[in-house]
Image (cartoon, rainbow, N blue to C red; front, top):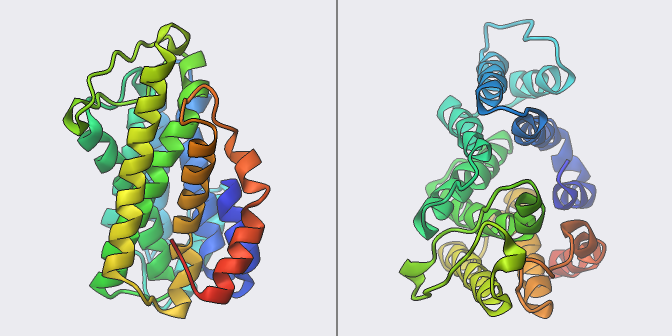
Length: 272
């Protein structure tokens, strides 16, 4: 499971009973494209997970396909007061098809849309499992998800480059004229740092927007919305490292101090 998700669940054990199976299911989906060597095989794996998700959400399906995370998610859905929207779950799974492309994001808007589809939808399903359905919370969750997803891309850029993928988008629309080669080591360090700062700025924008929309969230929503704190922690760490994707620390390193940030935020009821 995503390390930040695990820490948030530890801080909210009551809510974890309702949302942990979904987050574990979502994590398995995110791993599916990394377990194949050909895009066609990746599409088959994602289709399997998409079908599994619909089975887990189907009230009439008493026995979903035999996989621990599918079975656990199905059990959670059956006991939930509000059944997650199949469209959100399907869009979340489908978004991972971009992990099969060597250059997935044509521009910043493509990255923003993908981050929202992955993490915004993941958080919104979490809200539904916690019986939170009002539009403002879900709109804010989309922004939190976008911010967190953008930072996930920045922190994964080095590893993806080693695999022959360039996940940094064309940033011309943000006012930058950069030459971002597939081989990061051949790209000017200043260009890499400027690209990283641009992504930090985009992520921060979404977190600020979430707070404008939802300055005082329901207490029950905080276990989901606190992915915003994780995004803030990643922004701070990236900027401290100079925002060069080759030199940012690993997310696991950032997570080592996240528990303290989370404790302080809980005392102040902050989420982003």
